[in-house]
Length: 373
Length: 201
Image (cartoon, rainbow over all chains, first blue to last red; front, side):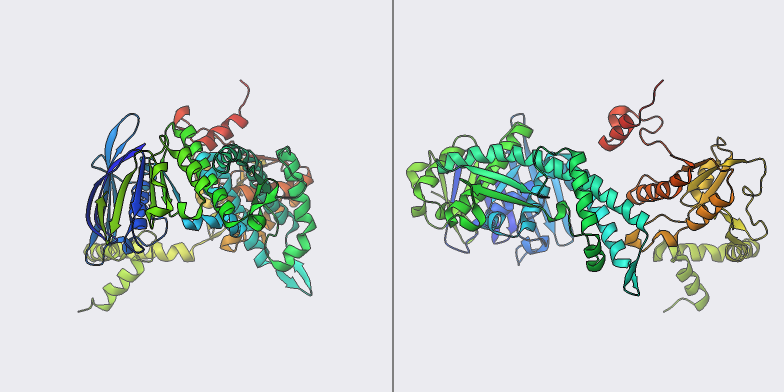
């Protein structure tokens, strides 16, 4: 999938922009605060109908204007068509081939992108919540069954927590309906065990791709992904075994939960661990290794999307190369060269060995204007 | 410029109804002004009667007039006394009744378990169902017909666990394809349910 050209009107610091892109690697060079990331943001917005960094669409419109437009021509294996997003103060409209799409969910998928931004380092360094959010959003895109189980689990969890919260204590002992709590437990277990089972198998798929990418970039390092859930559960456990263990844990923690008034065990407390050559990345790896790991996960996403949709998505790399050494840069570029249309930003060209990129298209970004090199 | 008191209050009252905003309420209020004296007084009397003449049946929880308590179905001896159909509210009971296929008794919970909405087992009509079952050993089957939602599911499981140990048969409505549906239009979840609940022919 390729983005042939892009037109921006009053988007962030771009008053008016018309630019054609190369199908291989597009390099955006500029000092800080010139609009490099804004351009990636525009492409991401065209793809997802929302920004990756700002939840308020209104902030995307240039100060002096009332509305903003992002549009571009998409070239896929089978067709060419324009996409357009119009952002107004009151809301946004998305158009495919000049026709308004009423539902954003129908619009998404016309342009697939994968973005790697500096914040992605959080995936490795951040709290388990960041990683759970990542696996949930990734897997929900890949399996609608996973999404269903996830939503049901969240409801069951909310219900159970609400019930625990409402339990009154009389004379130092909680007054609650044993039967009802066991029903709430069982609902939690039913969807929770399904989620755990699916996460094991989906993480295996992700790992297979990520390991290959990571090896290609680092040449010597072996990346492993480890799903952390109940200690006695592993990838061979059946759903019945997981349910059994889940149930035992709930019973074991019953008194504590009654006291704390919330559910203390389950897949909503699970985590994902990254290991390089057997050592945990979060605590033992260098900054560069951590970045490579996060990058490998994102690039694995590219391969998975290719498998799902039959086409490579567009890759957006925000300020990634400066943190990788020369070797890793070369291998990263080798990996994406000739198959994925890439947009990458950098503060100066000295960060990148120009010779590495075959036929790069270089743009200098200065104060909302793009100059083709 | 404000509306006269009487019409302002009428607009205020109409806008308390579900799905009615200020504009629609205003339109309805002005329409009421144009209605005949008789229609308006019938209307207001029906409104009042809905509060003063109605109550929940002391046996099954169905909505009934104060003069008919227990309700018509509960006091009908020709009904099959061995079956009790459990529903969420009176509207659901009317829906089952309109099939003319079921001739047993009913029990209306007037709500389902929902901790999020602050409704626990003591807030719905469950304890009266349990007393009813222990007072009437002739009941052989309890049919649970609650909505296929998370709350409905939890309530169904809960009732099953309460009633089954007493040796009473507990059944629930079938889940799966609705009549006239194309198989390829049904969503994944419905299909999964339909496959799991398949029946032999």
